[in-house]
Image (tube, rainbow, N blue to C red):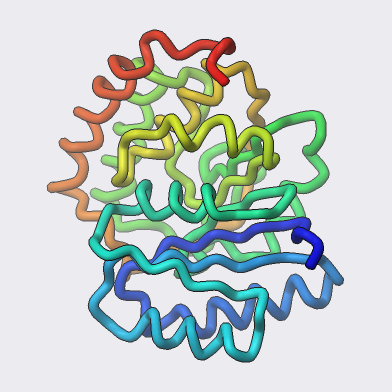
Length: 243
């Protein structure tokens, strides 16, 4: 069979309650666009019925594929595994809750091939946050992004939005180098992408906060700040010459 044009990757940890409707929405949307695709769900060592639900969907839609990890790696580890197994010319990852509606993907495609990577942003002009995060969580998120801009990837307003698209070439060059496995992996991806000379565009998107997020503000936050320093250290010698 020919390789798909688009690979959609969804990291999933105990997402049994919403993974079925999410897969249905994405498949229905892409089918209506007559777009060849594969939909990879990476079950990140979950303990609920996520895997069995995805398997049942896959039996009806061969474009849907389950990748099951033996243990919980974290969002970064799950996304990396999905990217490395993807076959599409374009690679897009998004969250299982579809906090960025799949229809927003239409804002990404026109920015290629002028850019190699396009990232969704909730914080630049034109973005529309339909449901905001709780005040403390949103405030700490903005503070984290300030640290990121100063210490790691200046110029990006929102590094943590869960919707990002890559050309196949960019994804294949970047993700083998990714070492962080949890939520700060987005920062490492952008840091490495810049070091390798890829062109990145931030685009405004519509976004909804989901109360069922797996990010734990007060425990994951300090770890993410430490990861910023770790990223700078491990990639101090990463340059455009890295294959």
